[in-house]
Length: 300
Image (tube, rainbow, N blue to C red):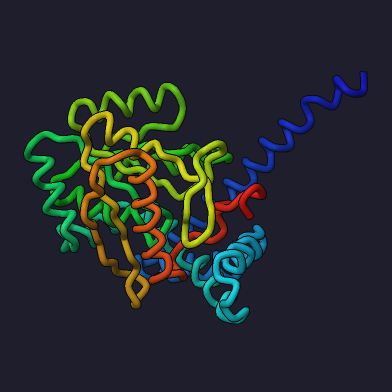
């Protein structure tokens, strides 16, 4: 009797926690959106770096990951990097909710890297295009810029654990352009149909995936999904690493599309993706999302 009565309690508490968390986050976002663009971006960066990040345990996890990858890094430098990483996360969050303002700022923004000419040629030929990136800088700014250049990049995304927050965050992704597909059988099937028609899509590949092959990532073994490479091979899609690197002013970006990854086999192509992102992380360690659980116990 006691056990059966206790069963509904955990789900209710979980839903209540998600509801309250979303209410707080969405309330802060709504208030921030009232402010001028640059003010709200700086404010959210500071709040996440100094208040929300530490309270949520993100700073601690970022410091642990930094110590794992850069054991020789001075502890003070780790603290500075972890704080900057949280600041970047807060800025990117409110930037992505400021769709109209961000789209206006990225309107026909200059695109750097040889990959831009490659995707223009692929689009003209009706060839599918897959852009791959990680949680570095703000990857959505490049997608926004590409939209103003006449591209239509959607993507395959992973639902967040908080369904209330996930519902409105997905809308921010869709507002930039392109169809978004949730991970899962139905979403993946739609994503595949999209590419078959010569579609354009974005995939983030820097999260831990249980059962995925172990590969080198920033000099450490990490499980990495090979799905992007497999899909590119299956549909003869152009596979291009891209990045939105935050500039020293904290507001503007360098939008870079690197050289397409040659088709070979899924493992080789995925390692090339890892190498590309690893180089960017080493160049801009303060802009990668160090609080990700990228390295799980079996490889930590």
